Image (cartoon, rainbow, N blue to C red):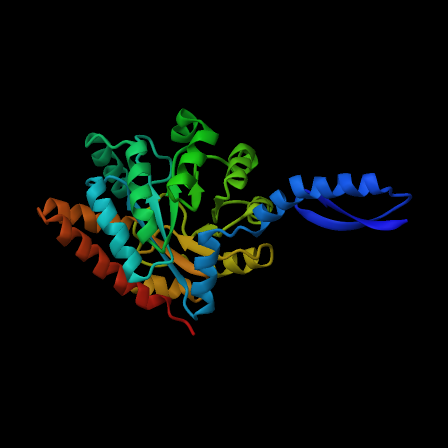
Length: 315
């Protein structure tokens, strides 16, 4: 009799076995070599998003995640913005993939989608550009994308392309948590994080379900309604954050309605970071309308984000 190491989906355990013959031991060893090491490697592989968020929080800062619309006004500017925001020190950047009928975006972001689509934006072209940029970027990249685009390309095909070019996570906001098994499974297969969104209007049971399944971070919607700038942070946000911390250990990053350094500072008192989208896109749009050069657009947004980053210091 002896103890035999068995591997089941990446978990190594000792099981007490009777009358294990040399041939059985040999077969078990082959099993471990063929499958155990595969699962062990998968388990040990880390995701850039996880590492960047942890490193930022460990340094005594909270996480700022700016949002840019891919192809607005063109992919050359998108590339310059990603480089500038990365050099500013953002641990992660959201990249919105334009869609004609977005469900949660306000007029500023929807207008940027429309203008990018009018300029003949293509998702494949974005993937190609991200692949070129990825070796020189430290920031984690998160694709925010409608399920219609994912379905059109095919779930497995989309996730495979996304991770191959350098994305670290996806947000598919129009797929509810109880219908995202296919997305979740494909993300797990490709070592992508599937970022879930939790709204203040959701029931406690729904929030618990979302928080329990969260990976990477939990996108906490800080205010009711669609994306867009607000005058102040929702007063109910601290209570919502406290409740979610009792359910999940992933970072809690708040978004929707955050646009000033004071907003960022207030959010970072209770959450692990802030997402700023509409305010960034509005500045890009205004710079375009003022006939600014690509370099001027990039620098104006970079300086704005650097100002926001001053609100993330909390140590």
